[in-house]
Figure (cartoon, rainbow, N blue to C red):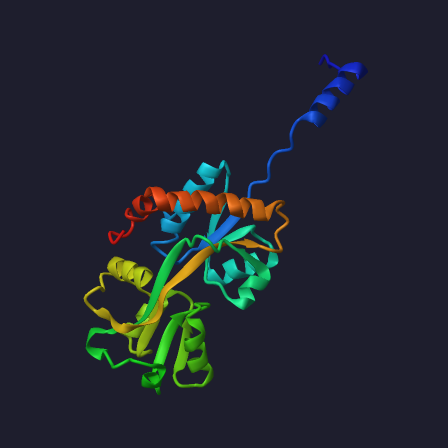
Length: 258
């Protein structure tokens, strides 16, 4: 077989050309909750949902190419803490999370309302946490239900039972393992609709959390360069999407209330 060799001078020229080519841009990796429909979920094996679609559109407007991956919530938090991803969707702000995250504070991805869900025939009065004395309250593992709930749990006013995911918690409610499930209204009703249980489960009027903003965050431990600049670019794009109606148009595909 005849072999061809590159002349030394030509090899030097090719090497210089390659050295002057711009380095391939790092593709930022963002993680989102696998079990948080309609905000983040898999649709035909592809990440989708309000938060996912909104950030993809914001990235497009900002000229960014993001890699969004869906993982269980506990894994998502760990990835952001350890820098295994560059950013995450969607986080409530807290002093602890500020230690390992940079928050897009000016524009939330969405606002959440959390309530107690019960079986239709098992409603009970709930005006303050004293009303939960002796009750067993379920939640999806890792769910942040705010300082008042945490204080009531610490004071052992009620017993809190953690479940691996929303579906398991709803099964526990229906089987009588818990008196109520504490969860996001939109997310829980979206799942109840899928399970055909919207007539079997209702929620109590008083909110545990009302209009609580959830944000995009960047991992402080991430090796990604210019994290603050990327955050600002996405924030600016998202702000424009809120103002020009794009956010509501995207959200309306999943929730008619928009």
